[in-house]
Image 1: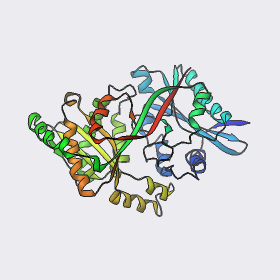
Image 2: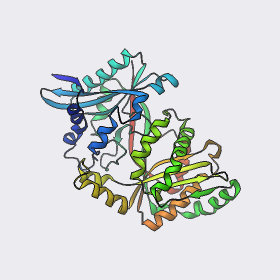
Image 3: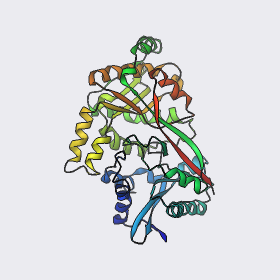
Image 4: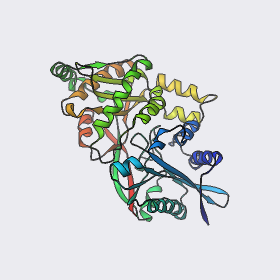
Length: 372
């Protein structure tokens, strides 16, 4: 018989974080998180998302053995400000037993009903900068540090428990050799002249920091129209600044400003840390940090993490300025393959940006919902 128990101690929370390490111990494609960072994500004293959201964590047991986990999340900004009465759930992993997944999902559904919410949706995180979606295609490709990997049986569990597809995402990649600078070199020069724009490049992380708040403000503006968007608050900006920017090579951060130094476009690219994280096995010490530093310096694969254009400048070709800067940087670095993070399949604007590079979709993922 499956029993679901709420996480109430630090020991339980560590068990929650480490459960996938056993579930995916034989997978060559699963990428483990850094355990310390994952614990901090769930720490109410360290993650400012808990100022606007709440989360409860649950483990499923078969006897004394942990066989599943789930996080039940309510983002009150989403519920109260946007009037989207959603019960979120994420970090949902389980052995291939319908009784396990049913017990965990019913726990989340119960919390949603207690809070007068209208539906559940997952797997999702706290916000738009968290991981999203259960994989439905691409199980033979290594994950990234910013996506969840899961066994192929997961999707059958959602369907068996009455969940319907809510959102669909795709991940694509293309060899850097696909990039033809003729598609943007001349255009970006004209665009910079017409709109009095200039590109900003960086050599040191501290040079980036004065612009990061403006970047998150622009992120909020440029993504506000998407159906899944929840704004990033000032407290969260400081948190994500500390959590992510240090992982990113400063030369992989590109900004575009107007004549008044107003930020009108940005992009963040990250080296691929997947294989380094597999070697680290969830720990920065004693050797994990070295693996990550080597990847940061030497990885020939990069991941386009975020790209945002101010609404006033969308459809005016500002992305050409950004791509031109990356072309110069990637050529110098000897980059071989470019990957894109999950993007909503109904986001036509972002699809148009990438069309000249002939990207190939290599993974798909979905979120599922159920009315309460």
